[in-house]
Image (cartoon, rainbow, N blue to C red; front, top):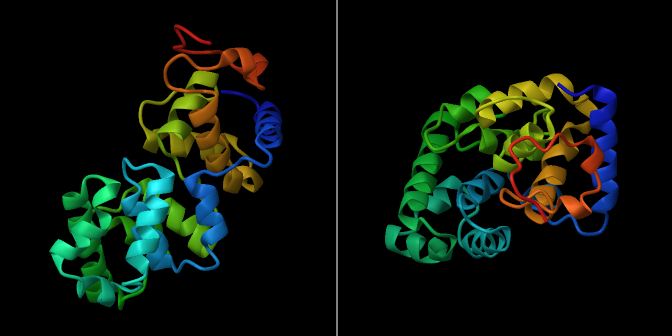
Length: 221
């Protein structure tokens, strides 16, 4: 595993290189946390599955014009809900998830989004990443939301050696200082989309190339 000093240096380099262009879902969530309720943040996360950030934002805004609470959400006919979220993809599964989560919140949590990881993940359709995003940006909890980029890149760099995002979350919490947890996801998601892509990463213009072990990289640009 990498030393903490090197990890902090890499995070600072990446953050500086992304200044002015950080527009990932998580950064948007952070910015919108002041106007999005915990429930809206949760629903937006469910809509973001396999969808582009821009699409998720548009669909979420359209949906929240009609429903901002679990009760209002369940009043929307299934057909209408599917039509509203259609462009986000997988609309049948997402509609089912949204309705189930809304019903669970009403029946088990008095219509309020719980503030613990255990309670959030006790609800079907809510996984570790979604739970952590809600905890981090709605309740200010010290957690690290780990998506595919945050799992893939630290393994490529050589910081950790894990097989799943869940394992990566635990490993990253051990090596990244807490004061950098809030920035980590946003930095690495954007880095993974623009430079450290899954296939043929742009190593020639990577700002942290000298710190990367390039594990598993067969071709690069």
